[in-house]
Amino acid sequence: MAVTDDIVTNNPEDHLPVEVGEILNSLVSGWNDIIDPNSFRVTALKGAMTNKVFQINWLKKTEELGHKVLVRLYGEGVDVFFNRDDEIQTFECMSKHGQGPLLLARFPNGRIEEFIHARTLLARDMKNSEISALIAAKLREFNDLDMPGPKEVQLWDRLRNWIKEAKRLCDPDEAKEFRLDALEEEILELETKLSGDHQSVGFCHNDLQYGNIMIDEETSSITIIDYEYAGFNPVAYDIANHFCEMAADYHSNDPHILDFDRYPDLENRKRFVHIYLSSSGGEPSELEVEQLLNDIEKYTLASHLLWGLWGIISDHVNKIDFNYAEFARQKFKQYWLQKFTILGNSGASPPV
Image (cartoon, helix red, strand yellow):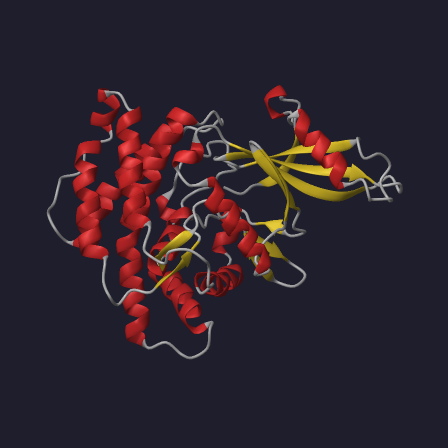
C-alpha cells in the first residue's frame, strides 16, 4: 500500500537497518551539492499496511532539504500474499515502460526507490471528477501494458491460496466467526458466475486505492505505484476494486473503518467507465458501457472476499499498527449484504 503525509518519527521500531545507511551513503557519494552524505532526515510515511516506508532527505549546501529517495522495508510474513521476485520484476518492467519510479538498490528485507515528485492522493480526492477522469484514462493505459509472464487470470487461484492460509492461521473460533468453510464454496460460485468469454483480461494493479496513485498537479499527470499485487485479471475486477477502495480513509484516526456510503453512485461509475473505454480512441456503445458496469458490480464481491482474507492473514503475520481483524469483518459483512442484491440468488444466508 502506498503512503502520504510526512511524519518525522522517534519510534525506535522505525529506525533503518545499518546496511540501509551504508547503501544510502554509496548512492549519494557522487552528489556534490549536499553537506554530508551521512547526514540525512528520515521521515516515516503514514498509511502503509504491508510495508514500512520512509522518505530520506539530504541537506543541500544551500541549507535546504534537497535530494530525496524512498526506502521500503518489507512487512514480516507478507510473502504469503505475493512472490517478491515477481514483484521486483514487475517493478523494473514498469520503470522501463516509464510507468513508475526507478529501482535504486535492494537489500535483504527491502529496497530503495526513486522519489517521485508528485502528490499522493488522499481519500477526499476520490470525489473530484477531474481527478477520477485522469485515473480512468491512466488505468486503461495500465491495463493495456504488454507485461511478461503468463496472461491467465490470477484472481481465483489467489483467493483459494489465501483461504488455505487463513484456515492454517486461524483457531477454530476465528474460523467459525469468519465462516471460512462457507467461503470456499462462495469462491467457487463466484468463479462460475463471474467468468465469461466476453470479459477483457489485462494487466491489473489489483490494489488501486488512493494511496497508490500520485498526481503531478503542474502537468495533471497520474502515476500508479506499488505493484505488489499486480498481475493479469479481468479489468472489471480492477475497476471494481478501485471503486470498493473509495470506502476507505487510511489516514483517519480509525484507518480500519470503512464507509461504504462513499462507494460511487451509478452516475459516477458510468462516467468512469465511459472515460475508461473511450480513452484509447473511439466511442464505446451503450451496450459496452452497460456490460462493463454490470461486470464491475459482480466483481465487487470478489474484492470484498479477497481483502477480507487479506485482513485475517495480516492480523496474524503483520506487526504494523492496524486493526486487520475488524477490517476483515467489515469486508465480509459487506460481501454477505451485497451478494443477494448483485447476484439475485438465495445461496448461503448472511451471518446474523
